[in-house]
Length: 562
Image (cartoon, rainbow, N blue to C red; front, side):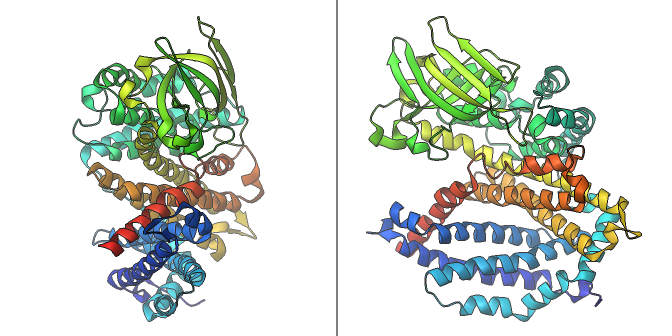
């Protein structure tokens, strides 16, 4: 086996230059694809739909390149050898992944690929891939990983965030982890006394709510960093029983902050921050998944409010929720699409079980039944139907001025949800990586621990490299969001982190062999839980095509016109 060391790798500066070259090729591909999808100077939805494959590859190339750029950018004099190795392993893999995506776009557009080929054939690129992806380099990287897992993806936090991280990590290990397996295997509801009430007292439901409204976020800016720290710590113990509890109050509170009247903010936000009521979000409908503009849930005016009629699905925590944010068509003219939607807050009693049936005094009815799922158990997602269910005018977000603006308020809420989902993915990845590492150290095959075999060590090193890149990207974008930017990047990190969680948990389960397929092993839970991450808070395909690719192409057209 040829032995390679860090000294054989290109410098971080040379590696960054390679990525800059790829960025230039990506810009050319983006500009050309934008032209292909344009009619009369503007993007055509029909043309975009006709170019879905290239648009999807474009979104992914951007996400992977951004992660690679960040992996190199965080390296410095204080970086350990393990951190440097993981960054180079990820970039080495990303170079080929991005090359293949860009090549497919260039071929589709019938454009020359000489500049792309030149990047891949560059001596530094070849050396990086030859060294960082070699058996000896990956084996030594896994050995370093085994000696000190605390060196993986270290993030420098200030004193306050360090205290928050320690507090929630301790709660996760002492309170959440012991219950996680039972909740999953027996399909239980998140317990009130052991988890929900302590988390209320720790302020977990008010992380996105400004202090003036009873939360813990500053009044003058967002605090995504704290939300990421808390979410990540809780998700490492259990995605469904703890890490996802923050998502629904996050979405609803941001929607209220974006469109609610001052009276509504003062009424709802302090109660949401206290976790009383718990929140549910009702967006998706049985016949319309991520196609929000086509939603049909009807809101009909009546004396003093609105009557809701229709069905929603995948309403997570709808049973326990005391209020549900319902995206409702309040304008009967369906031709208005998303401009006919409003957000209504439907109140209901909290129920413990897997189904509920509540009848209002006036006869309105709401019925819910939990959807059996392979994972993500504890909060439960519900099918919910509304029959003449009354919602008062005061519960329309924005009241009269908010009618028809529900789509915009929903998008404001979802931005935080995407960032929080990336943090959830990070927590699940870490749990799976550490589980795979422990098993590889302890399990002996043919007389030697699994970790001593180069294929297993290669898996572990690549898993750690992807997790590290994803975590660094998530924290950098959380910081960017707190500074008022990062909207596009939040979508990119959601796309990248969620698929990464699938890959990392898959490999962690594979390292366990047959035992990984047994429910008694936590890694099987990590695997099925991770699978949902690319589906909710914006399905991967919709996020890539309708949000990321469209935004990139619109930006390219603006540059061309400038």
